[in-house]
Length: 565
View 1 (cartoon, rainbow, N blue to C red):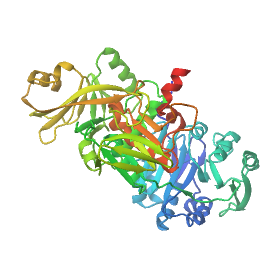
View 2: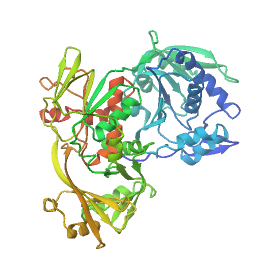
View 3: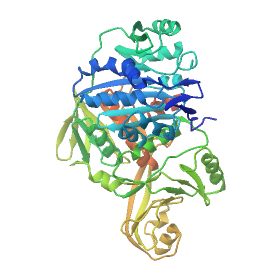
View 4: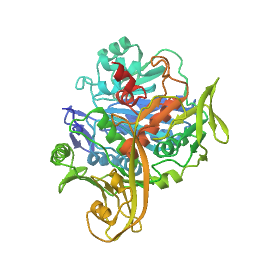
């Protein structure tokens, strides 16, 4: 059975220097670790940064994240040089260092740098975790076996750091299959640096396609290895198109955030029909299963990303009450795989300590928009034409984020539309956390609580008895408002996220500049933000936030492929 959590690194400390008990090797030199890593890894990339402009991005791939020392040193130089563009740092690690051990790095680096990472440092969940440290610095931590993770990665790397301990002690990182993947993921003229000048390393890197040379090493290490791919290196530049987003629900709002981070011109169209901003509180927690499949690793990664520096998220905790004994037993087996401070048994349910709720109304209200119902989207020579009831608009890129409503573009019906009800009640009893089961009850704000996820048709006009049953107590409650809406869900309960195919010929290239993000279902508040980041990456050409397996799982045309198989 696939596991959710990787084992953490087993570390001893010798004179303030970390030592790996797993591999019987030091993480860095006892005498000059910072100076040595600076010489081997960060100094070689500095000259390339000088060629970047505001629309550029530079991507570093690292094998062996460890304590993140190379990352910290790279970020420090990036900030000191006030480098233009975006730094993407993708690091692969199969034995993550614990936060407790990571704190000891404060002896080498300023506390603020270490604490900055610790604030968002993920638990050792297998999968890829996206972390923004600044508006222009993104760390993607991939906790997984290196070969599997590299095969699952979509990126074009400008510089590789090979820092995975001694090759004689860690052949999982030093072998020809790894080198072939490094070459596959490298741009023209990409560079690679490492301490090791071992003959096997040089030969296999050469066989993989790299041009390998030896350069002066640092201190007692006479030489280091430098390699590159053929061709001239040129900075990768992001596309900066005019983007139209149709829909101002969760998807549209998070798309605006992701594209705005990149200073891309965005126009959001709304027609007042978005369901997510009608329901002011939405639950944020990860759907899980007993076996850690790709979709559930994605769920955990999206759950983490949904909370990062999100002013609209409230971490109150969430208790899930299973509907029957079978479900309780299933959740018991799931909870056993996680630490109690993340997921634990609580009474007859399970408790997510880091979960909570999203203020969807404040999120959508923070996004500027054009009030116009777009009736048609069509391609016109080199751009998209959007025809509204009152006006026509043009865009280089169009993203359909229309939720459960009809699409302004001819396409198959990809979602099921599920009607539901949410109510606002004034109540004396206040729950401090989100409670979900037959319905979802949210903590009260100023004495007003939302109850959502009501699918009982008999409750279109809820009575006091209905409300009492939902709240689980008989304290006085007053119905303030009811909100009837529709939720779009796919048959596999995963969002639709990606490019728009040519439906007349599914094997032909996808339509230029047309994307979809919808079908978010009941966990849209958890998954929408990471999906939006992935769409932004597709548009700009940056490293993709999602792995290749999840890209296929969320692809627009996946059902057509499955049905024709």
